[in-house]
Image (tube, rainbow over the protein chains, first blue to last red):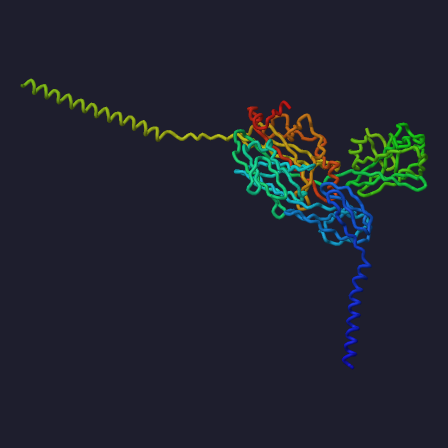
Length: 368
Length: 195
C-alpha cells in the first residue's frame, strides 16, 4: 500500500515538474517579442518578418538600411552566408549618431532612432611594393571595381592593407607615371604574374585576405631626382543642414533647421512661392501670398536680410533652430512654397567669404 | 807579318776603347734615368681629385593654420646639400580613410576641396600638381593652395564621417634636375615652365 502511495506521489510530482518546465519557456517567450530580420534578396531589398509590416529598402553596394523597428523590441541580427574565402559581414547599428558593430546572431534591444546597416561580406587587400633598392620612393595604386575607385600610396619595400572591401573583383593598377624610374613592374598574386595591373577577387583570398605583390627592377638612374612625403591626418568638417517641415493638421506650416554636420554652423533659408496646377506642375508665377509671407512675424533668432532668412545664433552639432515663423497659416491649396537651407561654418571669415555678411545675435549686416 | 801584328794590336786597342765608351755611356744613362725616376718618386705628391657630386632632393612642408577657419599650407623645399642643383617639383595628394588604429579602410575618398594657387602651380591631367618654375637649392615653393588646405570634406565624405574615421592625406613630392630640359621631358613627359 505504502509503495503504491509513494509511486502515485512520485508520478504526480514528475507530472508537475514537467508541466512547470513546459510552461516556463512559453511564459518567457510571451514576455519578449523577437523580431528577426530576414533577407528577401540581399542585392535588392530586405524585409523583416510577419510581426512587422514588410519594408522595402533602398540598397547600395556597401550597406543597406533597415530602420523603423520599434524601440524596446528585440532583434536577432541574422546570419548571412559568407561567400567562400570572404570575411563574414557584420551589422553596424547607429544610435545617436554613433555606430557600433554587432556580429550576426547577436540579439539587440532596439533603442529609439536606431538605424540598421548590414555591411556585406568583405575581403582585405594587401598590396606590397618590392624594389631592389628601397630608396625614398612611393608607389601609387588605383583599386577599381564597378562604381568603386580608391587610390593608395605604398612606400618602397613596404606593404599596405586595405580593410573591409566589399567582396567583389578588383583591378589593382600601378600608376606608372609615378614610378617612371622603374622600367619594369610586374604584379603577382599567388603564382600568377601579370603586368602593371592585375584583377583579383574572392578566388584569390586566403582567410579573407588577398595579397598582391608588385616587383620593381631596373631603376633608372639617368637623371638626378629626389622625393619626399608627409602624411597629414584630420577629421573632415561638415556643414550639413536639413530643413525640417513642421505640418500641423490645421494647415499650419513651419520650418526648422537641423545641424547634421559635425561642426558649429550658421544657417539661412530661402523661400519662394509658386502656383501649381492640378497635376502639381509649378506655373512659374509667384503665389498671391508671396508678399504675405514677408509680413509674418519671425521666430526667435531669425532675421530677414537680402532675400534670405538668417538664423543669427550658431547651431552646434545635432542642434535644431527655433521655428522660422512665430505663427504662420498656409493660405491656399493651389500654391506651393519651395525652400532650401544653406549652412556655413560658424566663423566670421567663413561668413565674410561666402555670404558676405556679418552676423551677431539678432542682426545681419553686410561685410566690408 | 809585322804589319799584320801591328794592325791587330791597333784593332784590339780600338775595341777596348769602344767597350769602355759603351760601358761609360750605359752607366751615365742608367744614372740619369735612375736619378730622374728617383727624383720623381721622391718629389711628386699625389693630387687628390676631390669633388662633391651634384644632387637634388626635396622636403614636403605642411604647416597647419592657426586659424580655426580651416586649413594648412603645403610647400616644397629644394633641400639639396652642397653642390645641389636646381630642380622641377611636382606633388600628388592621395587621400584615404583610416580607423582609430590607423588602418586603411576600403572606402572611396576624395581630395579635399583644394583651391590651387594657379599662378605658381598647375594641376595636370596626370594627377600631379606641377610647380611652374625651377627651384634653386635652399628655396621653397610658394604655397600650393590659395585658401590653403581645406580640412573640410567633400559632401560625399559625410556618408563616412559618422564612423569616426579620419581622413589621411599622403602628400608625395618629387624633384628632378631642371637642366637639361631633356631630363624632365623624358622622365615626366612635361615641361613645367610651359604649362
